[in-house]
Structure formats: C-alpha cells, structure tokens
Length: 126
Image (cartoon, rainbow, N blue to C red; front, side):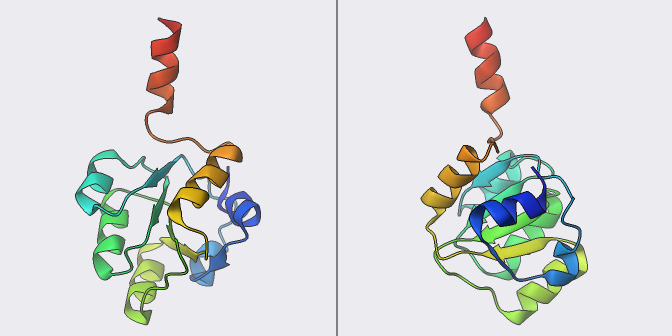
C-alpha cells in the first residue's frame, strides 16, 4: 500500500503536504500504540504509526524507527513545531476524527498488516 492509497482509503487530513507529495512511497505495515518505547521496539520500518500522542517525541520516535507516516487519531492535531520537525525529517503526518481502533481496522481491511502477521502465518503453516 502506498501513502496515497492509505490516504484515499481512510480520507485522512494531510498535515505535511510538503512530505506527502511523495504519495507513491510504500507503507510497509502498521502499528498502533501510545507507548513510545513500545513503538521503538515493535513498529515496522517504513510503517505507519497510529496514535493520539501529538508531542515532539512522536516525531523523534518516528525518525528513529524509520517510519513513513504518523496518523493522529480521534481528531488530534500536533502543534506547528511538531509539524515543522516532521516535515524537516520527511515524516508524513495525517489526522482523522476516527478512533485508533477504527483506523487500525480500516487499514487492515484495506490490506495493511501489523508487524507480527508474517510470523503468525508461518506458525499456521508449521
């Protein structure tokens, strides 16, 4: 799934148009968490984070975890300083009025999977 396909599937509000022009950039998977240490440990490189956290540490974690994008759920919007830092670092930011649970379900329905989906599929084969 590409960023553009993700945006179109969910009707997301783009907060970083200067980054989101790269709409063909692939999204490798998804992760939903508000515990940033958990995101660092488990979010897939090139993936999208779904969170309600809107502070600067979200961007630092997204950069360190090499995420493609962050979706702020439940109508949350970061401050301009956060948006500016994300744009500088190449992290696409989006917002949606939907709750994180619904966003995760809609992305799953659209074909995006979490970090452990491949491992679970291999376990079923064995």
